[in-house]
Image (cartoon, rainbow, N blue to C red):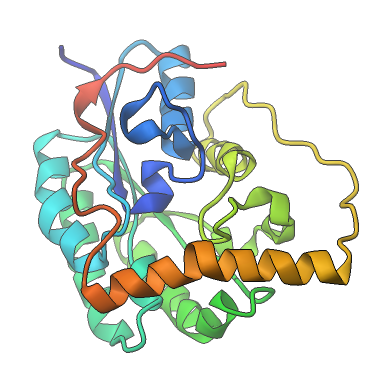
Amino acid sequence: MTFAKRFVALGDSFTEGVGDPDPNLPHGVRGWADRVAEQLCMSDAGWGYANLAIRGRKLGRIMAEQIDAAVALEPTLVTIYAGGNDILRTQINIDLLMEKYDDGVARLAATGADVVLFTGFDAVASPVFGKMRGRTAIYNELLREIADKYGAIIVDYWRFDEYEDRRMWDTDRLHMSTAGHINMAAKVLEKLEAEHAIELPRFGELTPVARLEALKAEADWVRNFVGPWFSRRIRGVSSGDSLSARYPELCRVAERS
């Protein structure tokens, strides 16, 4: 099947859709990129969609595995977010990291496609991820330079205050929840100046959490998510090692309820 317009999504778990479960879809997730593709296909039957993102991928592997594959699909629209998994490591050379990112974006931009980049989220409220705030700020400034250099569109995740609400996050506190993915899809479509029928999540007031309950929740989080995450780092394995791309070839997607 040939498509007049071709949307290719690249990256890691953020773009794969982790945190937005759907057992009927590849990898059991949906995510903001699927939701963007659904809206594009609804408005124009000429759109095709591929999602090459795989959870756990660091920037180097994304550049090595996904850029050539994306270019081969002759995209007219590309989204890419990479580097989040690198920033979480104990040691990182951000300048070298972003030089690699620059090379990848240059190759994507050379296709003539519209390229969409994402800043990193400001995790100032997190006692764990907030420690990476300085790194993320530097990453964001270098990413803005890359966007200016190649005329890329920026989705400025750093400035999305609505993600300060814990309900926008999955139970692992690292990935967006379904509500977070829905909101991100709307943000991307707005940046593309594309019409959409996405209904934004609406929340009531947050219920205060008792101190004892909060402490138990922290302990459960460390045991169920932080511990396994550090264990994988020590063993040099990734949550995406056994996975391949969800949609490696262009396809048409239908809106889901």
